[in-house]
Image 1 (spheres, rainbow, N blue to C red):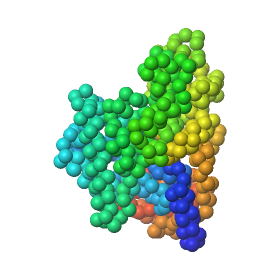
Image 2: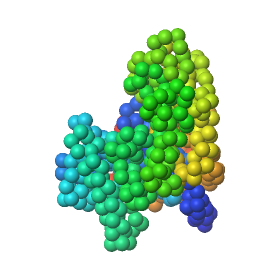
Image 3: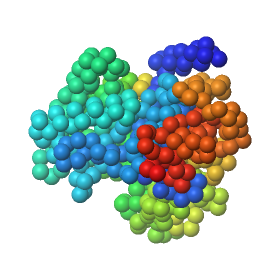
Length: 453
């Protein structure tokens, strides 16, 4: 078995090294969604994506990475555990967000010493929590004070991070940390935020946020993530599409093989105001929030699937994406057909691969779309030409569960070990693994976490 697992690891490593990246985001706020929509690292299929990015952490007043959620560290451990099942999986930590309405990067990049403090903090944090790299969520950082200065300071940060990661690898003899970024796709923001030709060489990959091109903030319906412009687009909206955005990044000097196309697992909604229901129909504000994501303006894919049971679905030929309406509600979303169109386009441009926002908004539980678990991401993986996921026994952890059939017939997830509360069972695809809590902690099934007695 050990030889079989070693051979499997070699095959997977060779494939990943020679094919496109499939980078998938997860969010630490998805754990608060009700019912089947609650999402934690335990819901991740470790063979689904080549990389998983954990979102989100932020930067404190001391210019150090800091957690946001009360149980982030426990979730880090559970995410890291997936690499024992699939040793080729890479995990990255995303930092960004806002503090009092402003990007935490703004203050940090302003002085060389504050950037140095952040970089030192980042390396220590990533190594401590067993991440393989850092993701900079530098999406809309420019502010009214000095956007051009911020733009150049971000370039300095990227260069300094890349140099520090290389030095750390040389000093520690460990694998060098990966460096990536989530970046905007609207031309005005690109111009304000990035010196593309100067930062691109220092990133391992760049996640283009090729979604949120249109939304309920506009007075007429538009698709969230169209492949091309539409006949109703005017003014700057002629560039609010994937084709225009990627072309602009390439023209500014970004290497195609470092750009990852963004695939959304959500749709943007509108409230129609007339009897018109097509693209460009008059609208005001969002449709009601979904029952699980509970935020007006967008629905997770599993909420879209529920909506489609009674809605009228249409295909926008000129943009290669679908939309659906029911009553006054309108949603522009992605499905397997639009993902296939985008993969074909992505391949023609020789891009480096795809990234998904997010795993937790796909129908990961297979509860709503009648297409199994992760219908969008699985289809994306297949469309990109990845081989079938392995079905052999996963690599064992340091300690195996003495009750060999504990997980037989049980859903994937964490379970208490009544014989020893300093340990707990992790069930994955019918296989049982025994994990240990940190010293002085015990496992609590109520929170699916290790905590104080």
